[in-house]
Image (cartoon, rainbow, N blue to C red; front, top):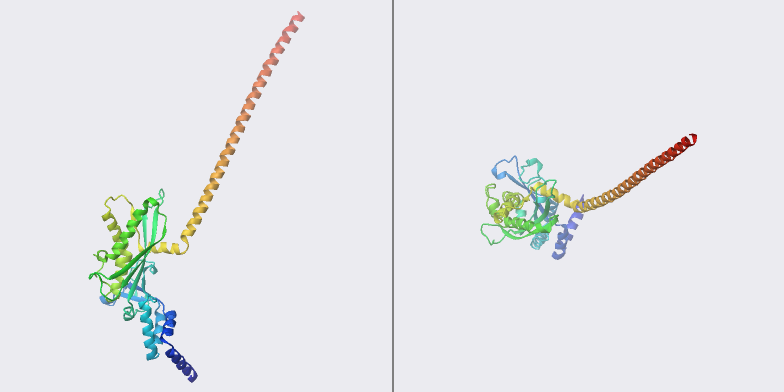
Length: 352
C-alpha cells in the first residue's frame, strides 16, 4: 500500500513538473468532445425539472476532472489547457440531433436517461455546435412516378459569450449545409435549392418556428440551460426547420405548382443511417444489376421473337409445300383419270 502511494505521488510530481506546453499537448490527446443530448421528461418533479441534459462522455470527463483535483499546480495547468482547447475549437460542445432516432419531442422517463450534465462545465465553452439532418422530396409517393429526394446534413455554430448582433436572437456565426445524397433531376434542382435556403432562413430567424408550440423566445443560449437547449434543438432544428421551411417556401412562391415536401426527424435519421450503411452504393449496384437484367430480358425477348419469326416462316414454308403437294396429287389424279378414260373408250371401240 505504501509503495502504491509513493508511486502515485511520484506520478503526480511528474505531471506537475511537465512544461505547460507539453501538458497542454497531452491534454489535447485526452480531451474528448462534449456531446450532449436533451430530453423532456415524462415524470418531472416540477415544471423547472421538465428538461434534462446528459453528457455522453460523462465517464471520460469525470476521470479527467479527478486528475484535475490531484493538486493545485495540475489544476492550473488543466484549466489553462482546457481553456486553450475550447478557444481553438480542439474541444467542442456539440448537440447532435442525429443521435435521436425517435422524435426528439417524445417525452422520456427519468430512468431511461443518463446523469445530468454539469451546466457550469457546459457554460465554460465559448462556442456551441448543433448538428441536424433534413430530407426534402419532390413528387407524390406512388408507383407511377419515382419520388426525388435530397438528404441534407447541416451544422450551425453559435457563439455563447459576448454581444450578439441581434438582441432578440442567439449569436449564430454560421450554418453549413451539405447534400449527402440526391436523385433529383437537373430541372428540379432550383426547387430543392429553394427548400434548402428556406431551412437556413428558419434557423437564422428562430422566433417564427417557436410560435405557438414552445414557451420560450430567443435568445435560448444565454446562459445555457436544459430548457433553452431543448427548445433550440427541437423547436428550431428538428421540428421547426422542416415545418416552417415548407411554409416559408410556399409563402415566397405562390405558384403552388410544386409538390415539395419535408419529412419527420425520425425518417430523416433513417435516411442518414441508410446513407452511412452504404445505401447509395447499394442502390447504384442494384440499378446496375437491374439494368443488366433488363438488357438480358430484352436480349431474350429479341431472340424469342427471332425464333418465333423463324418458326412462323418454317410453318409457312411447310404449309406452302403441303399445298403444292396436294396440287400435284390432284393434278396427277386428274391426269391419270383422263388417260384411263381414253384407254377405256379405245377398248370399247376395238371390242365393237
